Length: 113
Length: 114
Image (cartoon, rainbow over all chains, first blue to last red; front, side, top):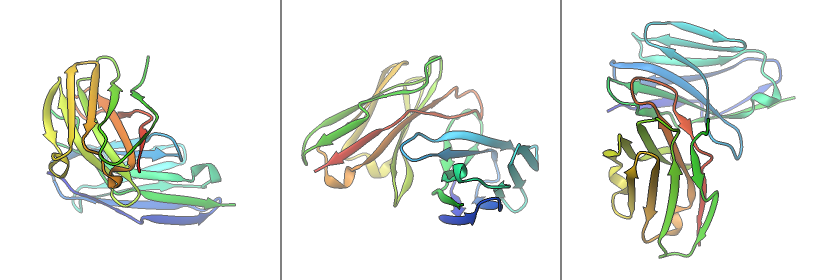
């Protein structure tokens, strides 16, 4: 199986500062690491992902880093805006022939004006 | 293309009742998941189907929770009998299943058990 730990559980930042969320996983066979954003009352939606053949990926103000040796991956939101306030989940996909993801516990991000 | 459709959006049940939640995955997706979401436990996997076959049945939930997938485009989650601690949001999700691809979530069913 797989276990994913996510920290912090709550993150409060000032508008225009950066926010970082960290996750660790156990299974070295994990090869795909997506991040989901869930706004209040909505379903989780994929915002960015990274595969094990990459160390860094950026989409606009979102950066994900993957350290396979340390079994650690992280999401960095640069220049945060109040609209970034939401729940964020990291996840890990393990092994072949399955679509199953193991999710972290989630991080509530609050961006204050 | 339609996404994952879940009904009802809200359900209120008395303790001891039987409730059935419904899910239609994205057309063509082979993998379907049922999750329970609470503030304390986060996202907990209840069931995982691949091509209608049950691949995983969350151990802690076997007792009163039963998910079925009678055809590739429809799944149900039955909770029988309901207890107040079952109050949560139940999310259905699907993906192609061919490799590590995007998981699409439905809008969820918010269950309140009185």
